Image (cartoon, rainbow, N blue to C red):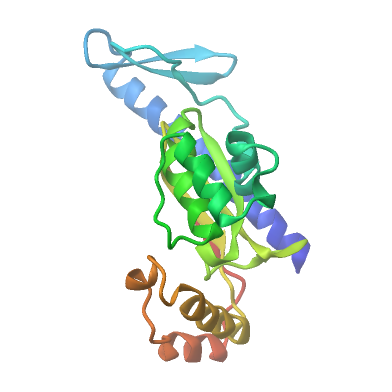
Length: 220
């Protein structure tokens, strides 16, 4: 049921937030707070942890206090590229990306430009722990769609210090919908820059296994 799935997905957030703090505490208890060049130091702050690299060339320390920011993928694009971004054509998006120093191939469609902007320009700026959620369906075709928008999927990507460190999502367990997505992905990427990374052969064994039955599933 939808409420139980939502509760389980909320657990993904909580577990992700708690694990780094527990790991850092375990290291601190074993080795003690570190001092000196090139080492890490831990310090308490309001019941959480501030993690700081010493020495550090500018910038803020990484703050592991909970809760961590949650932000939709498309909202990050609007924040970084302008509130009118979603209404721009591929050519207009390519031009705006170039103005920010990112060149994208002429063959890229709008969603390819979007993801290039996210991965090359936006993700590196996410220093503090951030859950990027509600990704476009074509980026994670194995995930369940969001209850309020079938174009988006129930995914979280935990980004910290400019890189993804923990993905998680609710598994799609509908074999008919999964087949449709595989076929759509093959058709949409044919002739694009991503085509070389996508198999044009559908995994029939995977779909057959799903037809036998897959309970609600998810994980980090």
